[in-house]
Length: 120
Image 1 (spheres, rainbow, N blue to C red):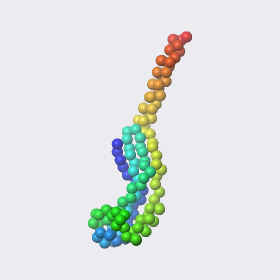
Image 2: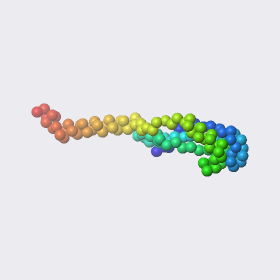
Image 3: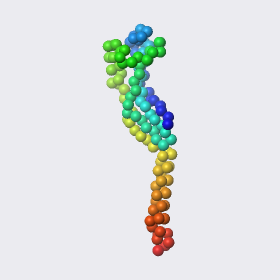
């Protein structure tokens, strides 16, 4: 099972970092989780948000947001367009389902209807 994140939006903010007070170093990103297995690809509905200072390499949590950072965050949050949550079957899953259907039809014909095979 492989987990990857689809980057929906990444923005560099002009606000000061609450830790090191550097300007234009806050990176805000919105990601959506996607889980890939050999049988399915599952895109989750939830959006993961993170803000990090590129200068001091500190993750900024919502409790540390100033009013200015919070306003810019709310603006960017409104502009994010998430992908629809979905489950897609991969080729291997389709082949397995097809084989299951074929085997069940064959079992039905051989077990439940033996007179068909005898020609009666």
